[in-house]
Image (spheres, rainbow, N blue to C red):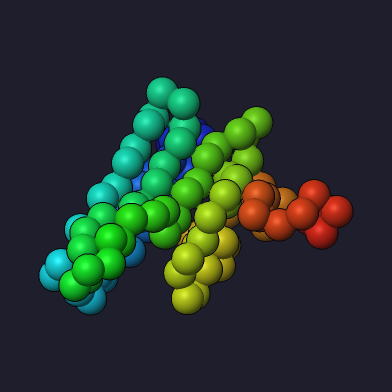
Length: 103
């Protein structure tokens, strides 16, 4: 399997795993897979009493053959999970950090 195909599959699998662990049945975990533009998200949608719940938990893009983590609201960190799957650290960019910190 080609590198980018592997990366796409890893990202989809991880987002689906995280989506299956929602602890509150009032909240929907929605996975969004834009394979044409290589944009992937896990979004929480719902209501908790009078509070609207909506927002991205995970947002991952593939840009220039690297995995860009734009948002990571998980405890373990999707970057750690990707490394465990065999993705080299140099192929992972923490897009939510300042460019000066990433270097």
